[in-house]
Image 1: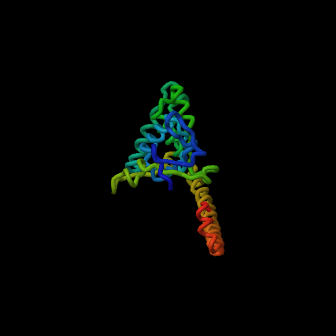
Image 2: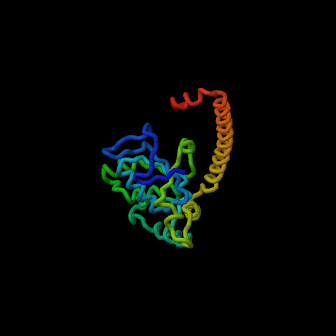
Image 3: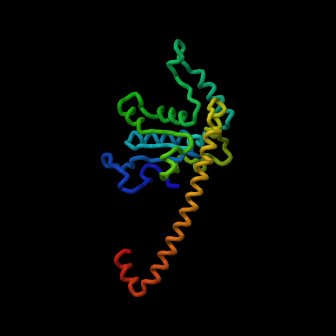
Length: 222
């Protein structure tokens, strides 16, 4: 996968724009599976404030340090926070993984100011990989990966499992849709490899027939 971090992610110039002296991709799609929740949210929020559009997919695969029991206890404590006179005014206790990430990112942005609200509009989060993001290149953030940032043997839990235990009802549905997407992607990749192999063989056969013209054609860049 592509690695993405401030200054480390590059894409074709045709798909980017310039903000001040900083070059920005129009949209960066991050595959959140295996990333630490807080570290990913902090990097995403910083990029949003700098003008970057960010889409996070597979939010159900995000990781939280600490065991699942500890995470559940913290969420149960969080559910007790409410407006005493009119609870329907908030705070709202989201159960889905994408909304948990959404709320975490919102807490790192001054979302009640014009600048923060505009930045937050550039952010989207999803469970699974819905169209059209299943057909685009997805990036990872090395600074937020669990395998690089969490100590060996340290307890952790997956955000999708936590959400399922606190009321999220769509874990099985997302898993089924992801299996269908992965099967389709595997079939596409097998056909693409076969097509690439045929093209390479045809190109090699054609080059073998050029004879003395091969150096001349190579010099022109073809």
